[in-house]
Length: 551
Image 1 (cartoon, rainbow, N blue to C red):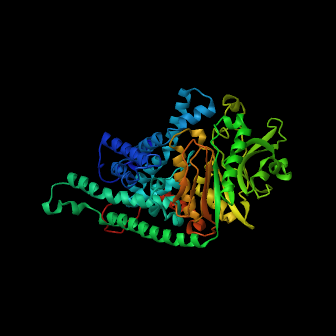
Image 2 (image 1 turned 90 degrees about the vertical axis):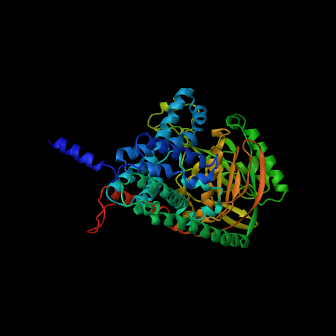
Image 3 (image 1 turned 45 degrees about the vertical axis):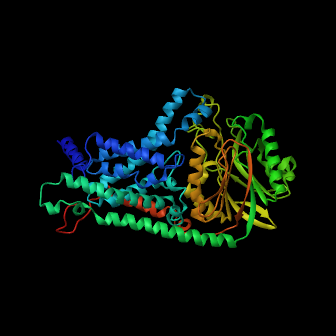
């Protein structure tokens, strides 16, 4: 009896969102898949960015009237379509680092994509639950979007905002609310564009009535259209104003010339012939020095050979080996080794960014905090060391525990620089903490995207990283082993970007800036509150005023 009551209650909670579905049967799955494909094509790599204004339209229409279970399924389909397209490069990465056969790597890719599709599945679940409890559908769709972007843990983070990384005027609200706010503006436009379609579908299924009441305008929610239009106008006006004011601030600040060296060492060549990598970086740096640069940035692990950390930090090892020959301050990537008292471990490796002055003396150190799965560590590898023998190409690095800035002495002045290693530059929350701690005048990312081959991944990485410059109104200098190396200005414009898989040396003018933004102060706090509110809406029924019509 109790079991039957629970089943009945479950069915009631999983009931459709009031009205019957707008799109029935397999049409809803097709709509969800179309959203996933449009999301992928709008994203960096393909960069058909106008699709960002309509990518969510099919999913939004497909979710109407669906049960919680089906809405979750539809969201997952959207996420799976986007992930399989956007993360196809995972296959070659896994083949390179794991050493597993292609078939097994393909299984891992599907598993990773299926897990990451959970972000959109979470969005569908939250939407359906809150809709069933009487909350306004457009509001809960936007809330579910924000909650899923901030709360769902991803292996390879991304944000919908990256779809417009080539449209700086649409990116500027990131200094208020990070990439999620930029994404919400796009969602509002999606809903506004979808509203006449939704109204048309409602009108077609409405019962016969007075012909004067069966007009499209009678079914359109003008508030949804209005919010979409006003959101876009606000983003455009605010964006134009912030670009103008930030450009003026930057032009008035002290300038410096930075050199960027892209060595283009092969993935295994770096390990097998580190001396060649060092020679290449020294030669390219000398060419830049002769052109008058003030400092230079090399890529992640550009100094490939491992060095005992005490020797590196307490002796002139790097100065005597190469840094003293450069003649300019430098930031470079190295691998430091710390003896470990654990006889099973013997030593610990750190993926490190180091800074030197013009004499080649070490002035700062930062150890990478967020390690790359499979490339730098194996999940559960410390608990089950045998996993490393099964995956011999995977690294076994240890994470750092500090976010102290590097110090560059340029033209007689010392400047704090926040270093971000590898994919740390696509983590808004982490970068926010590092900037708050170090109060830097410049952001630098050193990375090595050669792991992913000549694919869309380096361009996706750059697109996601651009938002760090806007969020903190500082220049971002990115140096990668094989591209894309770039300098991004404080409004997200790319000053230059190298081609992939070519050796290159470029220079650009940056300005030392130390601004403070709303996002730097609030971080993702408002979005976590949104996620909390959506969690409440998923379980608490909305109280309606007496006499109010059903939603």
